[in-house]
Length: 237
Image 1 (cartoon, rainbow, N blue to C red):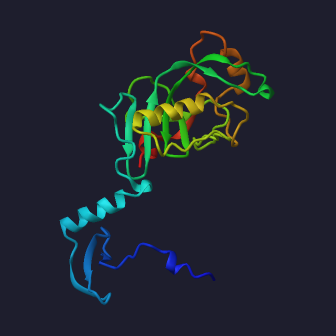
Image 2: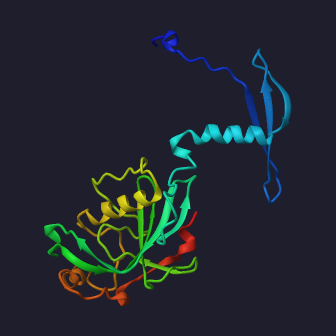
Image 3: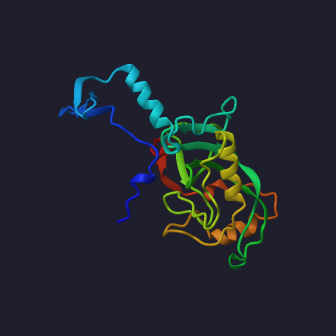
């Protein structure tokens, strides 16, 4: 193996060690003990992790893009459609009302591309994946609100969306508003091509459903929506 030691410019020396203790009770409480490291590399001065040390550790961890707590920050006031932001896990949950959008279909589906009404939707997305659900009510949902299968092609039974070759890494989104906008654009600008999973996303012939909606002013018929088996609180984390 090639020796690359001489090419390493930075020298890192151990300064502190952390020992995490967990109780064996049902509450599983955690206690963190800090050890200073002397010049010989030996741990000394065991003590409970102090507030100052905790802040320093948080700042160090926050410098990594994967766990940035400022990721998905808001440029101003939180938009009305936003329901939850989890900075540590890097995902957002938001809703969109019933609306008319331009839908794209591959030729094999025999559905023309064009404007059509879609139901109210619940979106959950992180840096590289999207889950989509339908809502029957257009008002602001609650944690107990029932979720329905999104009545689209390319959506799995669990709500996950197959984006195909569409670029979906939005790690560099400057704020949550841009993050939401990029995800909605990516979804509506991708072509619907096939059904995913064993469950029909609607209580009808999905091809005929969209053939009858595209290019018309008909509202989306919510009676064709199928319960997903979850409520909003089940997908919040």
